[in-house]
Image 1 (tube, chains in turn orange, green):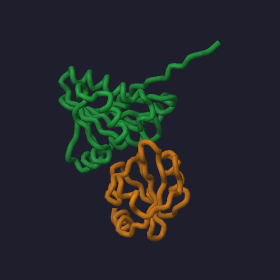
Image 2 (cartoon, helix red, strand yellow):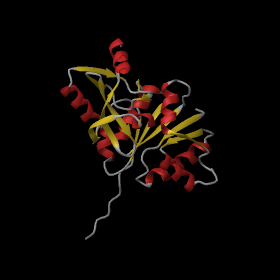
Image 3 (tube, chains in turn yellow, orange):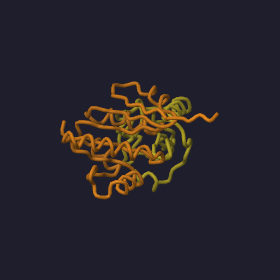
Image 4 (cartoon, one colour):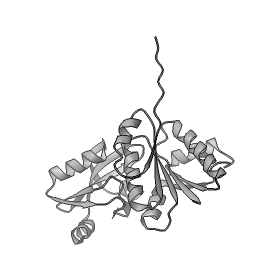
Length: 89
Length: 136
């Protein structure tokens, strides 16, 4: 999961819970996709409690990112190809 | 049952390493091969505690393990996920989704009961409640 940390990202929520991330995405974004844990995005496999809500805003995806010692973060990263995959289902 | 996976979380609580080694010893006695996946620090603590590898000889990076499970390159008969915080619940749920292993949640720490109540899918829960001392 180190490749996420090498990308240009914005932290929307930090040290939060999977539930808070889901609620934030569901509440604040009009285009939302729900995926299962293990869904691959940016070459990493998403960790979380299903359903994992991923928001789309312009060219950005907003999704939860979990690290064992730091908890869950909600990140925004530019990802046109990820958005295309989400829309294709 | 021939193999088991341990998923270790943040090693902030010293209980995790102790339980992992105790459990590994018990499974080894039953001829169950144990692989431990964890963060670098969790694995390092394990190796410091068991330098000869008497209890655990196979370790793997946590992220690599998740990748191999998600891509169906590997799976296990049993999986023990150590849960001490919300992130642990996330990893437990993820294992439930990407692995066919019989799942065990070892829940410990000061919020053990609250964390255990968040597990709403089928798995064996082992809840270790903290012992408190009262001063009079």
